[in-house]
Amino acid sequence: MIPRTIAPKIIQYSKQYPVVTITGPRQSGKTTLCKMLFPDIPYVSLESIEERSFATSDPKGFLNRFPDGAVLDEIQRTPNLLSYIQVIVDESQKTGQFIITGSQNFELLNTVSQSLAGRTAIARLLPFSFDEILFHQSLGSIDQMIYTGFYPRIYDKQLNPTEALSFYFNTYIERDLRLLINVKNLSRFEIFLKLCATRCGQVVNFSSLGNDCGVNHNTIKSWLSILEASYIIKLLPPYYSNLGKRLIKAPKLYFIDTGLAAFLLGMQNSAHVLAHPMRGALFENMIVSEFLKKRFNQGKTDNLYYLRDSKGREVDILLDYGSYLDMVEIKSSQTLAGDLFKGLIYYKKIYTQTRNCFLVYGGEHSRVQKDIQTVPWNTIASLEVE
Image (cartoon, rainbow, N blue to C red; front, top):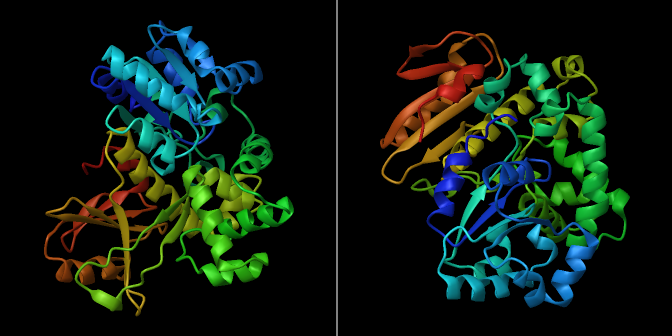
């Protein structure tokens, strides 16, 4: 098994909190990680119909089987258990008693925020990051990495990415979404997902997306929120402090995994990525996801934003640390042309609290130019950002 960067943080949480919640997309490795980190704790999958039925009909009897605690996998299947877990951990005052996992963002679920507030630590496990892959093998080319994506099972079992992501997509539609939303026409929702892939790296226009799908903009907002809660997409919010109405205020859309986005765009090998007009957007998506993974693997919250004004001047990532900022521009080009630095230079003058400026690009040379550090894409795992 490839070691997961977040593992020490989860162990730390288990010594500090009675409950540790591990959330993330399906197939991100939550079950494997739990079994590795907590081999002596009983494991129960609530995907099992028998276990789920028992937990739903007799939650006290179900939990009484585990006087010393348990790993409860896919807890969102039986959210009623959480109130009973609250009572147990309040009485026992033991740390690391329950490890619960789920493929939905628990911060958006009222059941967790109400039942386990102050009692649980939340760890977010996304698919492999660059440094996790580098522990096992070298990175492939840009096009290969975009096409393959980062789901652990593809690497562990050496699966064909197109086939694996096809099964993933079909399972997600059939199993999860039927439970989360009332979609009368699943084919329409599939079209919506594919349209999202075509808007990768773009500012979301809810009305335009709704018109293309044949639904209203409120439905689009609802569907996007569900995709984000399920860790399929990331809506990157704008940063508009101090600049008022001059900046764009809609979020940008990214996929958590570029492999899934490439699959939805119809790419069936890395050569398709190279020739595709969305290649630059997918490269940007891959780097944004990498910064997000870096934060989550350190046990930190999301502090990523983007900058863009009405004249099109933009910076792809702004990391907000409170008293200072870091800015990151992302370009798939292998050539360092002068116009690649324009956005960073412009906004650095406006936001004087900026600490570092980085240009992550598709080339191989690292250097400092115009007080901006250029960073080859395949070295960002070692980039020192908080």
